[in-house]
Image (cartoon, rainbow, N blue to C red):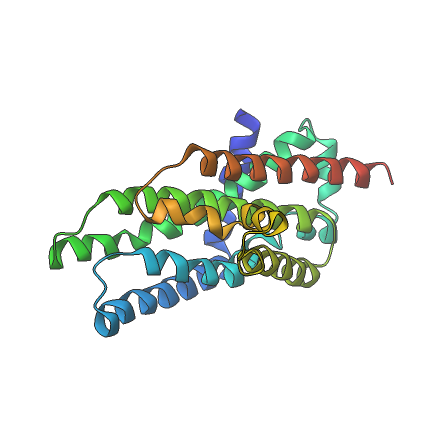
Length: 235
């Protein structure tokens, strides 16, 4: 794990040292800040359920920009050979890349803590949904990052990685609409839909089934990424 943490630390530093990291961070704060203040000014909302929902749309657009370079850039520059031939296993490399991107995303989330703090000063809302909602957003973002990491491992073109991740995340988000109904296949689509598992967190409930879904999804994506790297090495 020490090797994975070292790779993660390097990735986090690279985000803060590159324009893309600051662009994503600035765009994220601008968009989610507008959603927050619009909800207060125009809808008079004293809780953050709608903010959590709107933020998922922002993540569909911005998170692919964080993940597109993780492995695609390494392959494009030829530095992935150095990484793969060093005393680092595929699992350590993938886990380190994931933790680095997820860590930067968590920093983005931490910067939005000013929003619930503002609400507590303007009124006396229930703070439980704030804690559970942020936990859900951390898991939600980790799921999207794991998907983006897998797609980044499958191409050496960062633009292709971004567009591919964007379409897959949009598909996973739209499954909740297609799953509206009582048929068994609609129930299945609702369960597979990533945003549907965020609802209970936003309401202040931490359902172990939702936590298990997110962790299993992340684990599955990371496993496939490791296999994708192994397949690339044998070409």
